Length: 97
Image (tube, rainbow, N blue to C red):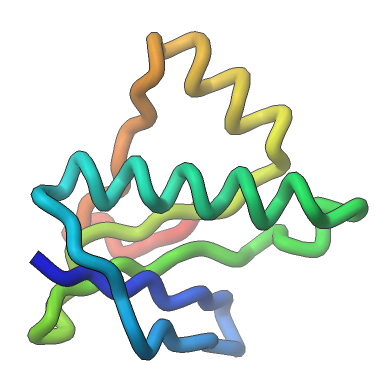
């Protein structure tokens, strides 16, 4: 399935025009984690990303899940603590926070 990772906050949206092919939602989630870690790891002031997140949609534009961006050290700690897993905010929650 093809997923699109739109980067957005309350006032701005940076659309993903290309998307990527993934086998399932778990792979999409792993891609979101990797992208987030790369983005926040390169940004010296990671607090700039507060309030931003990925809106992950399928080819039809249907919301699959929301993935908030947080400081890398916070996200890494949560990922380690949960044994490599991070809970998705499913489409039904419709919030970044």
